Amino acid sequence: MPAMEGEMLKGHLDMIVLAALSAGPAHGYAVIEQIKRRSGQAFDLPEGTVYPALHRLEQAGFLAGRWTTAENGRRRRVYTLTKRGSRALADQRAVWKQFSDAIGGLLGGTRPWKNPA
Amino acid sequence: MEESGVISGYVESLAGKLAFDRSLARCVRQEVEDHLREAVAAGPEGNALEAERRAVANFGDPQAIAAQFALLSLARQSRKAGVAVVLVIGGVFFAMKARIAWFALTQWVLSEEARAVSAYVVAIDRYAFWLSAVVGLAAWVTISRRRAPAALHPSYRGQLRRFFLLCAIAAGGLLASVICDGVLSAIRLVETELSADFLVPVFSMAIEVACAAVLVFHIRCVARRMASTAALARTAHFG
Image (cartoon, rainbow over all chains, first blue to last red):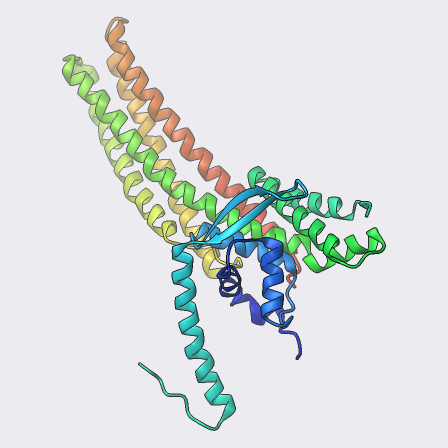
């Protein structure tokens, strides 16, 4: 499968990061690994782009960050999804599902998508 | 594996670009260094220099990453300035009211001549203060509910410009009001002999001056971060 381009992903980066953190608290490197693993390495995005997204989501109250000390003695920032973040992720999941079904119906061309609204 | 210095150079370069926000620069330096060292440790055994170069290349252009962090710093500083405008105006209002109440309580009397001069200054003071209060509230409303965007797009840029303009007008009005308060207090104080009663007006004026200085400081910080963010965004290569 070809890797998805940066511009295509940027609009969804916040949702991707929130989804990665829904598995549990993690530091930046683990979030990136989680994204790679769960997406089947489909996203081709500079790893550094995830950190501003983590900070942005923390500023928005969707994530809570705290400093810890790793086993190797290095200071490490660990992020946890807040209740607000969980709600935002649930909303984004619902919107994405609608969008994905609609596009699927359009591109698949077999069955028209039924709007639940 | 021995360190080759590539990671250190990279994190220093990234932190250096964020020098206008020292706490953010420190946080980013530690977080990014932790990431890069872990990426090197998780990679295949071999040449340290190659491993560090690979980790840094995968991380992305430091200028582009710094530009995104700078935008977050600017958004945070703008929101802080928005809150500061409201608090500072409130602070000046209470200091002003406390001084007026003190003058009434101590039955501080003005001469006819001083009263005539004061009337003009009071009018300027009142209009300048209420202009500052209304515009300051508008500035806070403009920025308070705005989440930091992922990029410095034209609509956010426009919103920041409007916010900055409103803050500048509010600060101008507040400075004029504080100067008028200073003149009014001086008119009263020069007509009386030095006593302990001077403490309340002098202290309340000191609070007003400090509030105005805090506001100017916050606006200056926003202006500096706007300039730094725009400069980083102009020269960054987004991947």
